[in-house]
Image (cartoon, rainbow, N blue to C red; front, side, top):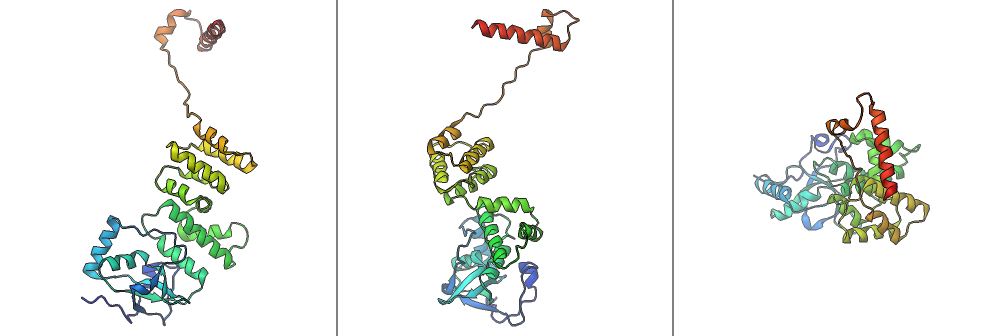
Length: 291
């Protein structure tokens, strides 16, 4: 079975890449040498050698690259990958020298939108990947003049992705986190909501939080992150305060239950629950004052 897809017209383009991606009649699938391919600038999606990658490599060894990627020509020479980073990497591991690609002539904004939309179709996406991807897509749409009134681009993104615009906004905020803190979010060492709160801090306070969490593997509560955000926005946050806030004990309210059979013998039968509670509180107050 030949792996070459050179000069084959693609008829199911929208089925493969989604309705937001179109292909002109002049565009064809071309085999491009792997050594001429370059990563997309600031590509937010990781290419990891894991079990899924091993399965993709095995599939390519058996059937070749069935779905072509998308590239555009670089001024410096070679091609920039818009879609197909994982396929290209797997093709190299499978021993291929070339990979089928569709060469598109598109500017930075269109390329960014294509890159994000095609990668968001993946089943497993890390929070950091989604955060940076949504931020890149949002910025590209604004640059294209699609933002209009405040929030319009978020609503358009929500319609395209099926995710609520408020959720998309939170992921865009999350992209402001340092790479180190975003890695904590990916590793589930830092929750999404606390991470979003901390994303409102400037670079130096974020570094304080990171350094503290390195030496104190604690879960950051939403109450703690909200307090960090509050003091950060007021300009009062210091490194010492970060330590104090994150070291606050996460106490739970105590609940004590006294059985009615044990306490009933101390009160007349005509006493109501409210009267019993009142007497107990009075006795406790007297006991406390005697200590």
